[in-house]
Length: 328
Image 1 (cartoon, rainbow, N blue to C red):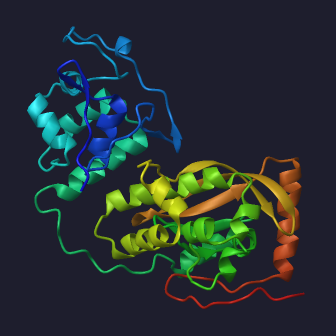
Image 2: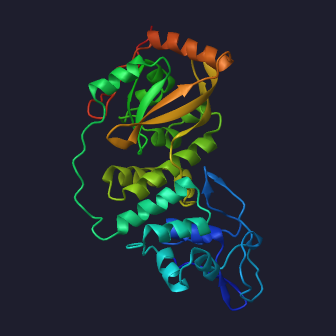
Image 3: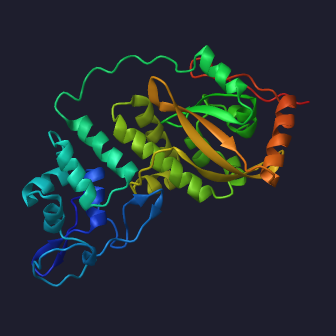
């Protein structure tokens, strides 16, 4: 295992805010570039300068922008020794107030803060408990809710499996529901299916988002075998995925906008929103809408007509069969 490389200014170690966040959120540590920063929705942000904090002078020439490790500890109100242990992944027993103080010192956003809490919870004493057997979240009532919606809607989990969809949802993601390996998985589609390049207007952003969501999912439940197997598969089959995975970006899927190019109706600018299912906050219904009176809204109307002539079987996590859309 690579040992972390430490920058030195004079005789003192220097830790940028980005390095502290990366080591803390993603042990074991890696050596990031001096200009890298914590994940903010899949993009790099500029580092806060020492001018943003009122800190005493600790001596030495500052050759690297950012905070020294002892300065981060000072801002969090911790000893350097204790902060260093936490930075190395020894979060077991850290209190909520300690985690909050570190999150404030490193300027973590909501997604990164949640990821930090997930990591601390998973290494806490007694965290390795027997996991209950999961049941399918796709009940008859959930499927009925989907079918009652007049906009594209899918049910997905943190692994980015599409567990169920209404007719418009299956039409929107028609490529995924014809993949050989089922249930449809957005991560496999984005990294392993060549059709994704034509479908996403910004495939690079889509890939960054997928990796950041999987990183958050893996941190929340590191014992989930299906998640680790998916990550291992993607790492083996896609060097692009491996490169992006090493950046350690974190993001929770909730709401946003995306631009897609559907092969039947053309380009659409869509807004998406997630609604967690009762009883399982990590399985959600995702809806897709377009601004009224726009070409994208007209395209959704065309998509509904197209869906009527390309009906596909309903797909659920425990009732999945490979299939192809029927031709009119």
